[in-house]
Image 1 (cartoon, rainbow, N blue to C red):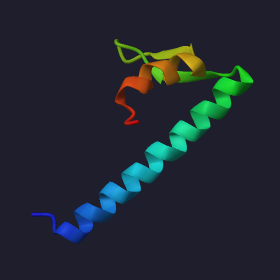
Image 2 (image 1 turned 90 degrees about the vertical axis):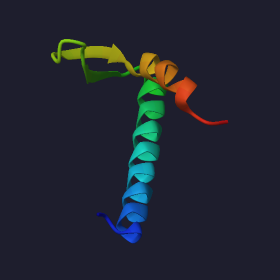
Image 3 (image 1 turned 60 degrees about the vertical axis):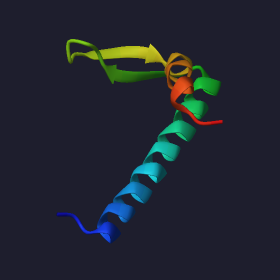
Length: 62
């Protein structure tokens, strides 16, 4: 069983990574860049960063 301190640290690290990725996506969207993501079949797929931000918006808490 994972102790609570380790679990808390893992959650903090995960939230920091999510925030960093979001900031990077916002920057890419402003610059009109694209991002590579895994498609439904597991193969790489190139999409606009703006598209990814629109997809992520419902999960973000106001």
